[in-house]
Image 1: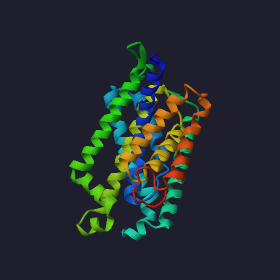
Image 2: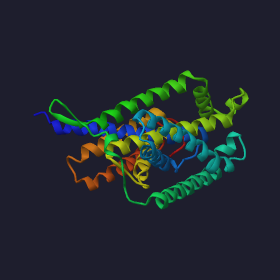
Image 3: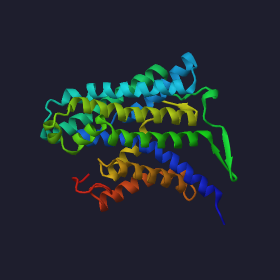
Amino acid sequence: MFDIFFLQQVFNGLSLGLVYALMAIGFTLIFGVLNVVNFAHGEVYMLGAFAGLLVIQAFAPPLAAVLFIVVAVGLLSGVLLERIAFRPLRRFVDEASLKSKAIREATLLSSLAVSIVVRELVSNSFGSNMQLIPQEYLLIDPIEIGGITFASGQFVIFGFALLMLFGLQWFLFRTQAGLSVRAVASNLTGALHVGINIERTIITTFALGAMLGAVSGFLVGLYTGNIFPHMGFAPGVKAFVAMVMGGLSSIPGAIICALLLGLSESIATEYIPQGWTELITYGLLLATLLFFPQGIFGGQRERV
């Protein structure tokens, strides 16, 4: 017998996985270029949601205008994050310096410190309780298809995520800036020799990754109806796990693993209590580290 609830959970999982994918791409882009992990990415996700809420409360503009402002906030937050948490510790531009363990550990702690400071500033400014999104902006209109009821937000998240993913592929493969990002990620020394501006490419990478994270946070806020200062922690962890499973620097691998995580969490609620679904993410991560030390799509990379 056809299980309608199962099909609905599959669609829910795909929507959730695409949110993880957008965040995982931000992790993967930065790791591919700088070989470091940005642990402030979850706070960029949260800032995008709060920026959208503040604009709505202050001006009540059309949703498209709010989204445009959130994109701008994401781009700006990426540039500021790079300048505050990463550039001061990046004293050299040679490949050995950028990929040294000392730089990796220092920037990891630096980004973690920035994430804590930003989260506490938002908590002290707005309180740690949930902030409600105005009703007229919520993406919760019911849509019934073949006996299955969906929320409009699921389609918006699904469609917008796909649009941004395809847009990212076009940027990376069809624009000069995108080709520079790929060149630096592939061979930093070669990129330097052919005259690519490394600093500008790094800033572009941070801005692009932060923009994807900020838009994700805002869309999820419109779907769930509330936002709070710690909302970026759980999706940030899931996105980081997807990046590790995908092989650290593989964007297609991160996307596939993010979708796998979203589907696993959503479908698992049909068989196990919801409180236990978090174990699935970490179980998949453990299995990946045991059987695919370079990540599922990591190729000949170092062990993750």
